[in-house]
Amino acid sequence: MPPLPAPPPLLFPGARVGVFAPSGVFNPERLQAGWALAEAWGVELVPSPNLGQRHRFLAGDDDARLADLRWALTDPSLDGAWMARGGYGLGRLLSRVDWSTIQSRPVIGFSDGTALHSALWGQARLIGVHGPVLHSLSVSDAASQARLRALLMEGEATRWEGEVWAEGEAEGPIVGGNLCVLSTLCGTPHQLNARGAILALEDIAEPAYKLDRMVNQLREAGVFNGVRAVLLGEFVQCAAPQDADWGVVDVLRDALLPLGVPVVAGLPFGHGARNEAFLHGGLAQVFGGGVSLSGANAARREASS
Image (tube, rainbow, N blue to C red; front, side):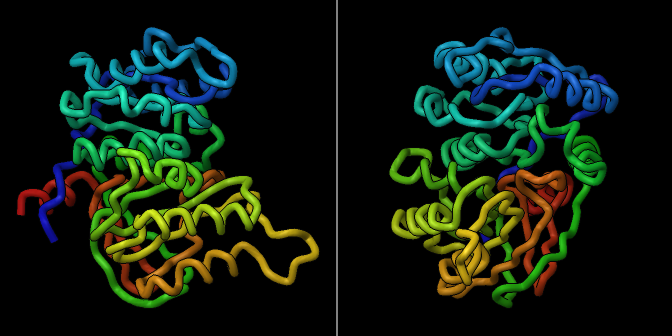
């Protein structure tokens, strides 16, 4: 396996973290609740210049959100960048970013943030942090809050246990995230490159037939080519019709088992209360139902070996 890129630097007490909203409109009370939790960790949260704007269903027009995205990724006074909320909107901005100007820092987010992580990985070869947005931090469970803090500030590794759908062992960078967002990136310059990687998938509020369509889109676009394993998080409020004698599990198993790689389901990431953070692009190992995820220090050693 080629060396992995170095992970972003750890955050430290007093670190300045930019909060930006490149996607959907956020609830101010929910954001403030997450803000208070994060500041209790000792970091200083800095609002982006256009935070709080609104344009239709977006947190500002494209120019305003793009300016804040560039600020969050490049401002030299910031030590990290944290998405305020997911939703939709990052796909409108990615082709207007000069990825050669981006330097490594913790970039935290999920959901629509999957698009940003995919671009950071594919365009800049940078490792991100797949974890709760600030808007969802206060409604994440205590274990997820603790996991995010430990990853960001201590570089702590972790291990998950899940349900084995297809046995085997694999090692590689863990990439992916929200299935719907990944499917919308297909055919664009920011389509996820998962060759040689371990692919993570989750989703929310999608009927079974749409999940099948999305997985088929990934397959036809070549996203599964060279994947070493698939990890499934929560598929919250995803269901088959009430009178069906099959379910979402059947749809996903039919789509993924023919890949001939290890598949582990029921892992603690996604849109539920349990959303444990991992380094997007960091080293992961799959063995049986266990998944070992590197922390910052382990990933840094791997990158230099």
